[in-house]
Image 1 (cartoon, rainbow, N blue to C red):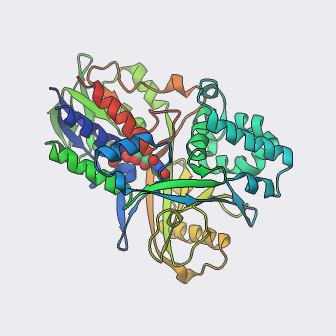
Image 2 (cartoon, protein in one colour):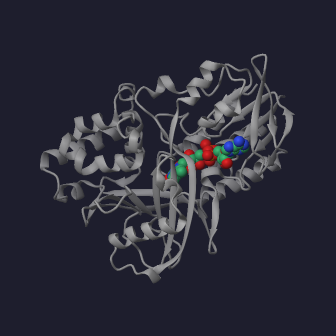
Image 3 (tube, protein in one colour):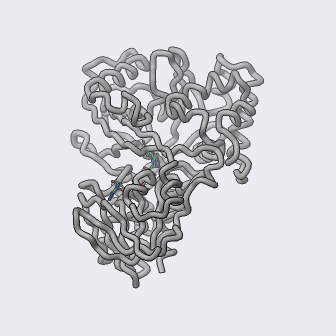
Length: 427
Ligand SMILES: Cc1cc2nc3c(=O)[nH]c(=O)nc-3n(C[C@H](O)[C@H](O)[C@H](O)COP(=O)(O)OP(=O)(O)OC[C@H]3O[C@@H](n4cnc5c(N)ncnc54)[C@H](O)[C@@H]3O)c2cc1C
């Protein structure tokens, strides 16, 4: 059996290690952070264990359900009726069902019908080959018209993707419509899930299983180099020590790859170097009062420079406290990415006060800020041709990150599904 190194102890790396160990391989996992979990890691929020980045489960997340069952955690899945709202130029509107759409006063009836049809047909569609070649903004405009685009989408795209806003694949946005649009009890009622105790519960169980089957997890152990010899992988360097492996699986963000594998052939290096991401600064407030009754609140307001908030406690309850995530998705070159914590806290709480004028300064119990440089891969049209294959032509080397399951958006379910495939390929 080959000796396998897995780089990254996020959901994908840990799930790959778990499947490899089940198949009898010898596995070592290397994680740069001091804790496992990657994007799904938790922190202690004044006695509450909470994800650094909000996580919800959709009804389409089949691979998550299978893994939870295999790990004896199927009972930890909870489902809640959730809702969406839209804060449009200073006023709250219900959103996310046909009646809300019909009542929304800022669109004409034709645009509403076109928008409704786009959403409905998106949930029914399965062939995305044409969508891969189209731009998301052009595809949405073709369905909803200019007015629909301006009122509902333009600002959301601008504030999530900035200079990449007109370079997003229609296939990528379509999978998001489909995943969320099919997570419903009925046409009128959205339903979302979460793991009781948070994503950490899944991460901890994977860690337990990996260790229990004889795997090793090295925390605070960044891999600085992956070595190649004669077009095959030969090992990794960790904290200055070179270690031999027959097979290496990396799950770190793909933009790290050119630096991490200096011996990579030039054509492969160029492919990885061309990939783009946006980062995120995720502010999470613990409050004494709710901001709204919705799980998601999309925002289009000239005073507010974020596309929406996630009121997480409207999915997972936290006693008398209300938990609200305010994600600033940003290219890492944007000045806001390095804005001080204090000023981001002031600004984001100021936004929450605009959304709910009854919120007072004394209603803010605590705030935490997490930053991630590679939070959202940018998938432009024809991404299918650009994305490097997970199984590389270098023998024993597999390279994946959250963009490897395009057109699906980053997500735990797709990550653990791919992990099973990756493990199955190790000979
Ligand atoms: C704001 C936000 C919201 C999200 N919401 C949801 C949601 O609602 N539902 C959902 O399913 N998913 C959601 N996701 C996505 C989900 O968190 C990810 O898809 C998943 O956690 C990614 O797992 P991964 O193992 O592929 O990558 P990561 O979790 O990124 O793991 C990669 C690991 O590699 C480590 N690493 C990096 N460099 C090195 C190195 N040199 N050596 C060793 N280790 C290294 C990193 O520290 C990290 O732990 C969200 C993500 C974000 C950012």
